[in-house]
Amino acid sequence: MNGPAAARPIRALLLLAAGACAACALVYELALIALGGVLVGATVTQTSLVVSLFVFALGLGALAAKPLLKRPLPAFVAIEVGVAVAGGFSVLACYAAFAYAGVYTPAVVVASLLVGGLVGAELPILMELLQRIRKQAAARALADLTAADYVGALVGGLAFPFVLLPLFGQMRGALAAGLVNLVCAALIVFVVFRGDLSRRLRVGSAAVLLVGALAVVLGLAYAGRFEVSARQQLYDDPIVVSERTPYQEIDLTESLTVRGTPDVRLYLNGDLQLSSRDEYRYHEALVHPVLAATSAAARGRGLRVLVLGGGDGMAVREVLRRRDVASVHLVDLDPAMTRLARTDPRLRSLNRGSLDDRRVRVTNTDAFNWVRDHEQDATDDRYDAVIVDFPDPDDQGLARLYSAELYGMVRTRVLAPGGVAVVQSGSPYFAPDAFWSVGRTLQLGGWRARPYHVDVPTFGDWGFWLAGPADGSRPAPALTVGNPAVPGLRFLDEATLRAAATFPADRGPRDVRPTTLNRPAILDYTRRGWADY
Image 1: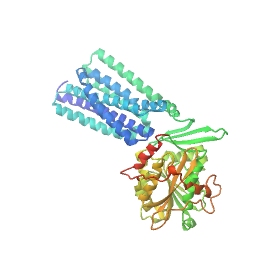
Image 2: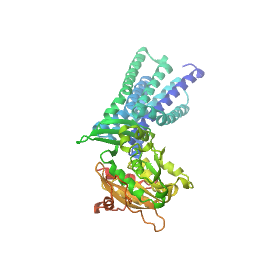
Image 3: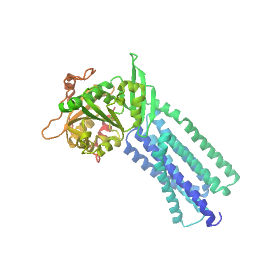
Image 4: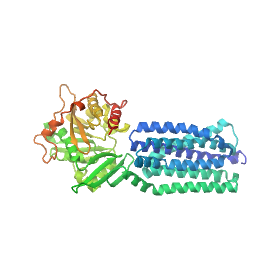
């Protein structure tokens, strides 16, 4: 290289490439974490596993790179091709292991160690290349390189959730990062050090980079088909709608029963949410007892009902069957879910177009934040009945929706005087600790609650808590379907509801902890309860 002035732009180019490599590394790490959250739900566990293994492998990779420092340019090409292929295909490989072999954790351990080790080898090689441009004190060179590395990590950390994930999804997002790695290698070898390569080394480097690029491009081209095929392995019935959103994976399957009637099933992140064969049992049991428990005065002026979750529109359908309902406000996180509920003919037939009813207002936002930000003094915007219909709490984000803090804010911020609430609470048979923990949590949040459970063949034994504010000596709301009952109920009646309040001895009340934001006990109870099924 020429003097310091001539070397300055070349060094800047190398540092830019180093930052881009760091950005790609963080994309691979975040993509593996996000995939684990979707497939197995244990977001905190998956984050800890991937991050710890990745950082550990960085150190191993840095040590392993020492013998390569004698020939840094060909070593850098080989490492970048390895990072591009291993990192780019890491999400796809882990998804395949989960879908086809039924394993995930071993696959993510291997992927984290492999990608982390290759990324760890980058920094010593880049340090050697930086010194070859212009010799300087090791501490100064390290400061420049680590600064570029950290800035690149910031870019990658922001690019993954805000650009790559919405535009490409997890699989294609990781593969797109692989292309960036290959471009960085080409930039350093053929631009920064173009005069330092022999003809043989240029041809060899070009060939290796082209092979890596071909592999990544083919991965990008076929990732969509692979994902559809792999996802189908997770379900017994054909997938008719599949959509990945920034919040979740939505899958709709359809098959014919023995009688020739269609069985439509909705899955969120692989977890069954409803089956058209028996969803009416669940939703009648969820909705009608809480509406019947509202005060006569509230029913006389017209009920104001809040539904938290339930973006499929089935709970809203049941609410609208009552003539004394004046308005329904649905708060659901994912606009893609409520859009699908409005437009998919299968879901629309099941929910009877409930989300397009003139009495219904839909807000797509996080329910916890919406309740927290609700104006406490807005007495005209309080609700006589609150229906809490969230998926089971199998990750940290969902566990906060089962916390005493949320239940307390629902009681103080959104509930009208004399109002009541109901919470879907999972299975008292399969996850009894989680079910009874909901009752303890409601109590901590200032409610008096009454448990009940019904049989939903697709789910099994399923439970709910009907609750009212713990004001003075006011008891928990009584279980009733109303007098007179809503006409046309297919499952729920007074006799069924009386039986629903009885629990067998082996599934009765338990000494369990409540859930708070700081200690989400229900998360552990849910995982342990379903582990054997």
